[in-house]
Length: 526
Ligand SMILES: N[C@@H](Cc1ccccc1)C(=O)O
Image 1 (cartoon, rainbow, N blue to C red):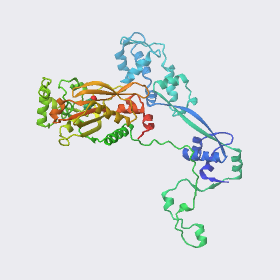
Image 2: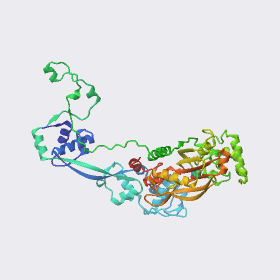
Image 3: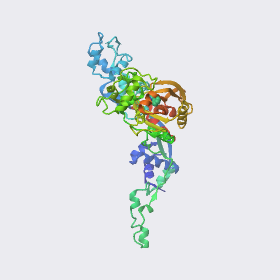
């Protein structure tokens, strides 16, 4: 019998009286595990080995767990410091003991939350006592850490730690569990017979290499005998190729992937371009003038105070603003527009308008474009959009980030109504499979009427706010020199994603806590 060299090596390393794992075969044959797996499956097909599979659970310490192996568990360190300070006799001030323990930052909280639980003592009104009978040497978790120190993905039943302690280490984030499929091969009777008869190694090639393709098989025997001199074929002509086993397990590769947020942003852009919109572009840091004043936002509006915006320290102010426009905006703020206009009658300060900040919405791009600053005076009809980052000094929670993407847009035309606005959203969202948009009357200083948009979360069924919109007011448009209707909106890209993909926490797709599995496996549809 003839077999490829890898299969022969595996057969020689395997046994008839005992199952040998792929890893052990790989070590014995000096072949990569993937190659051994392939060979094992080939041999199984040939009836030369029997393959069995089992799922092994393995455990390994996390980085934090490993740190505690050397430094000691925080609660044990606290106990030792408490003993040292005499807390076994009388309560001692917590601050003193913590200082003496050398614990810092998060480790202090960890120590405190485990101290009493494990019976090391009592913490009460800023004082700590140490139970003289407590025994850190008998601390099950500390002993388990020591026992696991060298266990790198060791099978769970091979480690000498009870399951309850393993569970508590896992809860504390000190231990990771993994599951892996272990394949084992045992020689069949047929293999034993064949091995005794002697198996020859067939020279097979597993892969076409550039060398094989470019080499010349100059002196093949056939050429010699026919006396025709060197043949002009490559060596690949003569070799025997190994058969592919398409069922063999292969190593898993995690290739790069365009983030679903980026993919959806591109899709939103394509959709809006398809609806006849052009893209706007502009600075992330902008003057309050473009972000707020041009939107008829009073200078004492709560959203303009320091806690809601990220102000710039250097430089603090924009150099240039169009003087005429500044005058017109100031007048609108003070007196309103038109013969019956009502302004805010409050002070308007140009210096305040020049202050620079990270834009809290991309409506700053809309004011720039509508004013004629970016692409000159615009005649209706016009449609513009952007899909860009905005920045808000919010509190992080499942639906809020400090920065997110806004889908900004506006339509300029002679006559626009709320029906146009609603119809545009229905058309836009239906392209993403969202057919149940709801509208709620709202207030913005720069739109009248205004609407918030809501969609239904596909798994929780809750209403999720997905955007804000309206028809720009006269007080905003007149200073900008626009004398027709403009309807506009700002939609949250991340919220659209929530409705499309059903995740519940925005942090699943963004930032350090993001769910990599979700990002790798989410199917993107076009
Ligand atoms: N700027 C608004 C969105 C919006 C834009 C244009 C008109 C109306 C509303 C926001 O960030 O919420």
